[in-house]
Image (cartoon, rainbow, N blue to C red):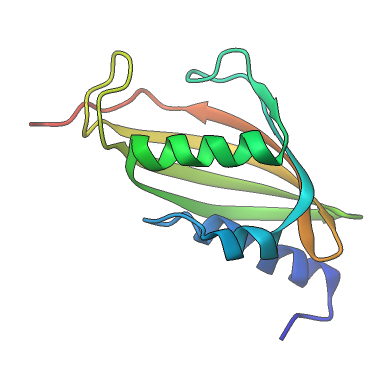
Length: 143
């Protein structure tokens, strides 16, 4: 049952989106339920993507495939939400672990980022994501 309050519905959707990545990956059916067909993902520049990117649905899904092969685990921890109109801004902590070597980082390296994402919602789905990630220094595997 969907909440009647737009703020509660927005939070429920975004937390479901973030939760679909906890130690796994969203299924195609989940993606179709949560994202509009014309969804866009704007990633602001960060340590791993210095130029940032603006992805349509197809390139966003390709990025998810890369992530599946790159990370052995990841988790989003929502910390706070601000809702205004059709936009939910979410502050969160992301953590992940590399499954394989990537650039200067070895498999097992632990990653942490403090993030803010702005989710524009349309008809109960996410239509646009603008994400800002601030990474901590990666922690090398003990092994």
